[in-house]
Length: 106
Image 1 (cartoon, rainbow, N blue to C red):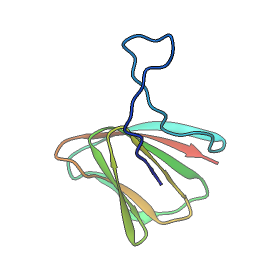
Image 2: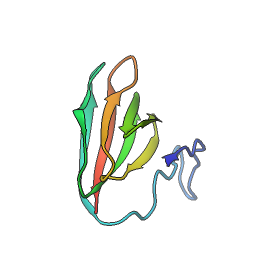
Image 3: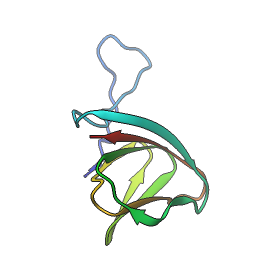
């Protein structure tokens, strides 16, 4: 499910600080990466599977996640958990560079 919590808020005792929760408890983090995806870039070309899941967070641009026979569009400041057992790939879906964080989860 795409996290679409569009409302940012200021936590108590903060000033000039806007935040929103992207995800909660999901399991054990294996690793994390940041990706800069050029116009028309992405991959893998052939969707792949694996045992771990991916939590993707877009920080700039827009990503298209191909999941078997469907696709999920992920916009800036949105997150999506991809089940690793489903064939998947990720592509830039914007008119410029897309930046996203990928967190691998057991």
